[in-house]
Length: 284
Image 1 (cartoon, rainbow, N blue to C red):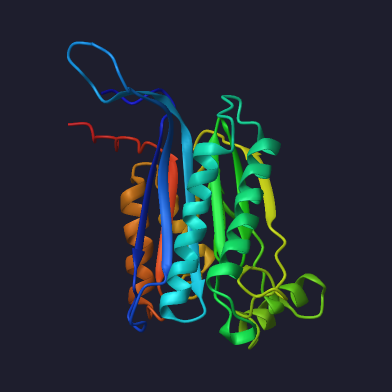
Image 2: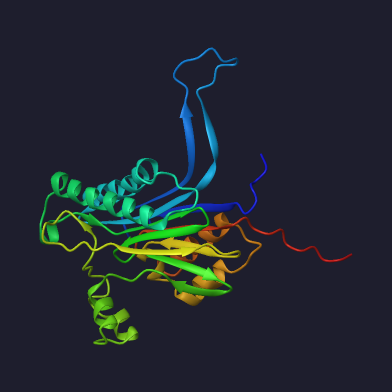
């Protein structure tokens, strides 16, 4: 089947890295389509249902915290909550109604937090939790929900921009001018979160919501901090820039380079972009 005009391609990859015994990162890449499930009828030949055209994509990355099993379960619950929101909570607006999408994602995240508190209760260092960075690309626009220190980047016209904020103590101090960006990166609080989906009743949860329009040539990356601990923005931009390289190859290159640079944590990368251009052939 031919790709629709202006189709986007997506690919995600997660790797345990070189130091961790298990992978607590979770990610999802989902196509958003309407679907009818046939319950009864006498159509020939009988089919189980019909799937409508592609409306958009849902991407999410979550990095679990609070013990191996608990962190992985918290991350799993978070990405599943985003999937349910996409299926049940958005109303499928072709225009990509950003406020409605943002509200649906935020409601789902808050419900997930309440579920974490019920099923994985704990306080302080015993609390289970997860970062969550989710992007819904629909109707020519995008909506991002974010909490924690996983990241969402946008490459536009060759320039890489980090859309999300790192919700760490060091990041907050840098934003307030108390630390330079260099000192914040080296701070012992560089990976201490003030905002996440946590089972702790005392933890803060203030989801960051961002919206924008998709433009020709854009590339979006969602990733866990296992990638950004080892790859700086210049390296990430160099991998994302080539228009002749597909989303799969870019995600694989990012994960491979983070492993080669140390692989000290679980590494997850999800890339969405226009279908890769065919490389130009040299004239005979």
